[in-house]
Length: 307
Ligand code: ADP
Image 1 (cartoon, rainbow, N blue to C red):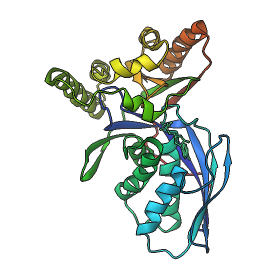
Image 2: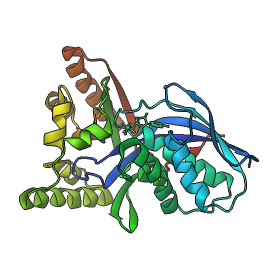
Image 3: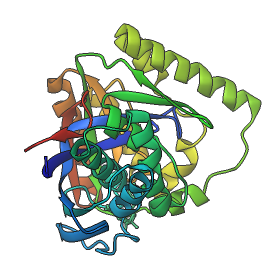
Image 4: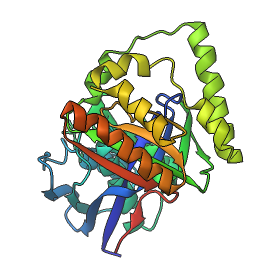
């Protein structure tokens, strides 16, 4: 294979109580990338559609993640990349992660899959480091593994694939304002109280158990974030009203998607997820902020070949 076209899924990181460790992949929202083998060494980004992002491979997360892979690969050539950017940077649904993950996944396919998924996560994290100064894996892991993933440890890197209940759907509303990941990290405190920790790991354990056992009530009770959401939500206009609207629409729970400004809700069944979307929309219509809404089942495959 000399060329591959890849679907690179959008992702929701944190998922309320799983700050920096939990994430999930979406199925109906994502970028497309074409990756081509070249005789010439190195990486060239030849085309970016949809967004104004750097063509310089050293400044684009796709290039940086790709260089990390190339440094470890037994390969004498290089790659050319085209990106069709659907996910807006700074939206909170893993725009940079989609490019980082898509680049290394596609390159691995073209090289005959010499690297494991976990190794690909480590390469893609280098792209995340360029985008947000922190080499976090909570978006790139679900983009590569699919479904829900838990980053159990960063040193050594240990990613756990978490079961995805069949009827689970995500609704995401993206108010059209930009919050840079780097900025929304700056507002966070560097320490937490033991009391908050106890609540948070109780909920994280509950959420993971609820996902594995398909216990939607337990998932609903556990979708709470006592640590990051109260601080970060200040950066998102209408946040509390959107949460109330999601609940009124029948969602199991809701929270900030990644570092925001997108807000996600999880629901049992597509019909409820669509209803939740309608309910959330009303808040931004009233405030007068433009928005986009996505309703998607959970993508259990991660990056995939389109052609
Ligand atoms: P998101 O959480 O949606 O990924 P971030 O704010 O974390 O948004 O990252 C976007 C940053 O990464 C922007 O500064 C953008 O210019 C930079 N960037 C570099 N290459 C890419 C790319 N291929 N896709 C998206 N963002 C990129």
